[in-house]
Image (cartoon, rainbow, N blue to C red; front, side):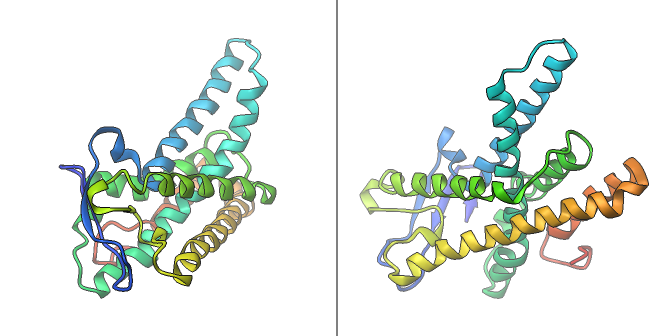
Length: 242
């Protein structure tokens, strides 16, 4: 569970784990350690890069090549991840908590709802209304590299969250005491990331082939549709399309 008001995270593990559940304090910059927050901040950086390119162009200033290259690579690295995060929360994490009759209050926090839902909307705004940045199949390796960097980060700081309790992880799938499951869980996440990367590319295809004919109204409808399909705002699904 995440308590944003006090910046605390309750680390819990599977029954077969050798790790000790504990309450991890995340004050200040440590509160940005979650993958969702990494991706949220990187998406903001993508907007900054693209905005900088536009601003330099309007002022007849040549954009440095490194900015152009980083902007082209940055968006496909982080944008499909937004779809992965929202889809994982809606279709896997939230239903599992309800199935186990555990509290979902931490998922209903305003900050959490924004970062789990509007992240997709912002990614689609860039795709459908602003620069129309392409996401190509060859760029999936960049998304994988991003996931590997975050995995390395989680591993490197495992002894810093609660030193007196031994290694701790913010996410259960990083538990290295689970044997073969400790390998299978991260691999499964990479497979999920691959699936949502393809879904993002399919969404781009749908936009270009089905919604382009309706101009800006069609693009706005497309953004709202994708946001609602992968977004979730409460336990009751009656007002959600899927």
